Length: 366
Ligand SMILES: NC(=O)c1ccc[n+]([C@@H]2O[C@H](COP(=O)([O-])OP(=O)(O)OC[C@H]3O[C@@H](n4cnc5c(N)ncnc54)[C@H](O)[C@@H]3O)[C@@H](O)[C@H]2O)c1
Ligand SMILES: CC(C)CCC[C@@H](C)[C@H]1CC[C@H]2C3=C(CC[C@]12C)[C@@]1(C)CC[C@H](O)[C@@H](C(=O)O)[C@@H]1CC3
Image 1 (cartoon, rainbow, N blue to C red):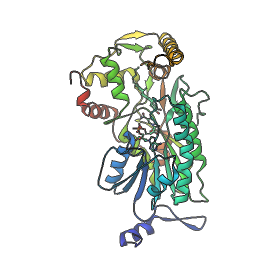
Image 2: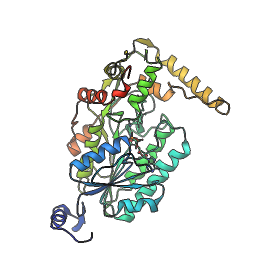
Image 3: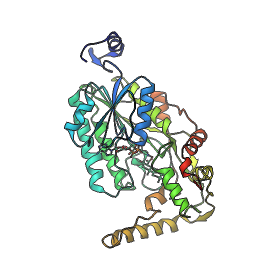
Image 4: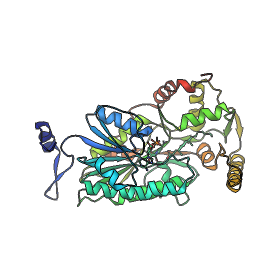
């Protein structure tokens, strides 16, 4: 394993860059990288694209959801550094896209995985000699439940984030960006996607269809004109890979966050309707005032909290979902365009069509 092939030597030569007059190895021997959270929705799409681009991939995840040639699986909890280290061996580039599901109400789990676990990821990367770390953050780190139109990366972090998951995403992003250290040759960048959708998404489309099947998707919250970003998963993957490949000591992207969107803000309710109609369900039609629905959702949420010791129920319309469904929240990806030449590779229309097609089992009557 330690013998350098001719191909390795050429890649080594090509990728050796100079920083402060000292040679700094930017990409190691072969194109080997690790994806932490590689069994998940985004993680697996990222792994597939990396394989297409000639990388070999080491996946680290708490579960294994598939097998693919060119992928080595390491099963474990990222909070356990000893379990993580073998997955980072001989790896120069790491993508960190693991997180507990945002819908969970387990605050301790968010805290330990997203905050403590990310500290461990950073330590393990440095110990293993990893040179680049790309974090999947979230555009919601600046969202407080009120309108954001064309939000840029210089918006301050939310003081009152919409939920605890987002609170921990803020802390996680700060940790990763602050760890960027050109002197030590450890470079970091954070990608902030918003509303990722696409084939195999376990969240957006399945929750939407479940809500429709229970007859609860008849209403539009507010006047229905609020614009939102929904981002096709392949565009999110494209943003991650561009960031990784542009991450060099002399690049402006070091230590910075980047919004990655479809660059096509869409009315929240038009997007939902297109997916629902594509799957054979009726589009929502009746309008309800935003303040009324938000108030009711808050009341239900409080009720669920108070009654938790006696009965457990999970309301569909949580205050967080109502805020996401009834406000403007779309972001500018201008900085990604300028600094890394980002441009969406799949349009919203095409993304929706491919997504709808990928869920035959969720079609009306299936
Ligand atoms: N889905 C979205 O709309 C969206 C939007 C913005 C940001 N994000 C971020 O993108 C990333 C990927 O999200 P996703 O939608 O693919 O979620 P996902 O749940 O499909 O994938 C997350 C993966 O992380 C793994 N994981 C969780 N805890 C772990 C632990 N302790 N150790 C090792 N692995 C662990 C899970 O097993 C899972 O495979 C997350 O960081 C999420 O915060 C998602
Ligand atoms: C019941 C209906 C009113 C709505 C049904 C659809 C919702 C389940 C989704 C619509 C917007 C989605 C969304 C997320 C989860 C699923 C929805 C609420 C996130 C909160 C998931 C976590 C990400 O980090 C957030 C992000 O910043 O992109 C997502 C925002 C959109």
